[in-house]
Image 1 (cartoon, rainbow, N blue to C red):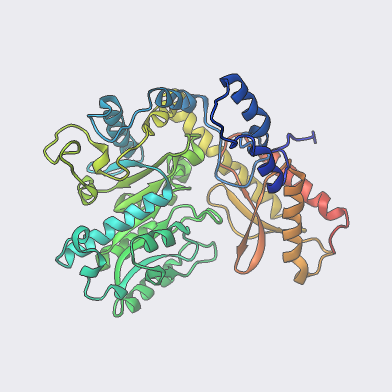
Image 2: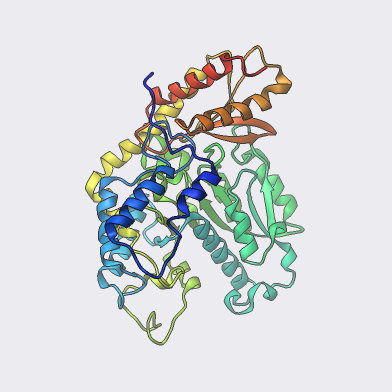
Length: 456
């Protein structure tokens, strides 16, 4: 095994702060660009993580592709705010056309539409807002004017989501004024998706005491990459008349891989879907997308003014579909990725981590000293090192110490999580660069650490 590149300097937070202090020493006189570049190269860049290295196996980050860099450079050079036609004719039209093309690419309904967002967190928040707005409309009032005070009993309002749903849903209900008590968490099946067998009964029992505004299906949980039964959840939403939002920030890209597409069955029935292209496609941050089944739903977000985004405008104004009123040209890097790489290459790149993670899981299932904790559905695998010499009651401590040792070495990046109270190690692959062999090397390093007799 060749010695891998360090993922970052290995410095402590205190050391990084000391090094970066020179950058924030603002003075009355400026410095030449060459000196500024030298400061950045010497004091900042060594402390930035190398997402482009195959041993980065911990989070949903990737360096931008060359095509994405080209699009991002043009966007940066022209610094276009693409809120509306007035401030950027080309930028506004490009976003509108890109959103239409993405809806077709994902096989959504003819009347579907999309908008570019700053993050999946904000996309989830807007999805829940539109759900609440429609529910208020059915109650006979305009949520935009009255807020949640318009509901006779706001404490009845409920948002249903998986126990493993992303924490951004808590941000959403806090921001919307619903409070965390509005979140009703649904139990999981053996592979940590929403338990379809319990879903109907839970909803029937809940209907007497709560008003189900929205149900959230996660298409790729950030914990283990599980995909909820979207079709079954769509059936329940149709039965009770609630909005279905799919949080596909991490996993929805994998619908584009033909062998995985069926796992996302029911997505075309969702009222809204979140997707983060910056995770797998190498798009620069910020780059998120919110789809809606019916483009008319975006009217719930519209705000008009006297000087732009006027109600009578017939030109494209992306700013009326979602905040903020100033938005970057996020669509351009996406367009560059799909046109530059081509759909076939994009799909191949998406397939690579899925196959590598499955191969790793198959291999580890045959290892006596490793416990695989789930069947991987996307590009995440959680497992535990279980050497015979370590007592069961000390296994959690072992995983914690292994994680800390790996991170201390600085040449690999893995992550750690909790599953049903058990501490687990977690590998995440979003880039096509890390191959099966790179994942196996991480397992070998973990086994070497165990064999050093540092644990027991």
